[in-house]
Image (tube, rainbow, N blue to C red; front, top):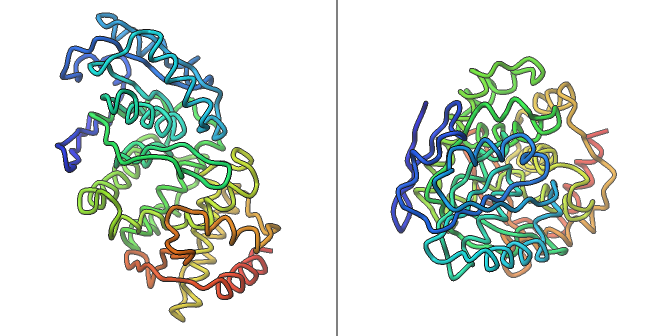
Length: 354
């Protein structure tokens, strides 16, 4: 088992990565909670909900299962879970367990942040993608006009990453999660980036995947400790997300996975970076790897509609769109891009994808 600690303004929490952690969460809970509510989705629950319950039989347990997919990060689902928490008698000494991927973690974390003005929660991620979303304390639900616009910074009291749960992932879920690892590699260094895109996702070993997941977590750990509330370098973690979030909103949440959108967004960030800094960057290498690993490369979106969605993004200030760009892997900057520049970049990007 591997362990990291993340410091935040109100304390510290541990990230444990290993096998079989879902069976023994009771060993790591530091308080005696009055109630424990496990929030999961319909896909994850059928595999792992009973496993988690077995390790918590000394607690007063309840569970709530949501539909799988991004559309569950909705105000109505959020309200339903709040109602469930009230009905089962949860109080300020209760615990929420987020058992699932990024959608479950974001939603359950936001429920915890706002129930009785904040109660404890832990993350039990079951996807590759959730290695990123479960660390750093960002919790949120979506609005029809933009992704994650309703949320908070609210750190968990622990993250317990059971690598065994990744064995049930579909090919698509593996692709989705690996895109966030590529993002963290681009933030980190050329060495890590080129190592990661040498990988064939169909044949990646569990050991190599855990190595890359730990590398990604360490990148995020360092950044969120230095900039908890995203006033500076934490914005680097949004690499690829300016276009990704806009694509998700334009296409409708769930049409493509978050990670598939991020993969396209990373290509776009590299494309814009090449234009802005007049440098040759690994656009073709990344595009070739994405195609070889069956990522959808969409090029038919409406540039003007995409720009509208970008202006609704939480990173946009005063209707001025800012993008995370790179002079090289590991050398990132945040630049303001005008609407005309962005429209031109989007149109030339679409031509380059064909």
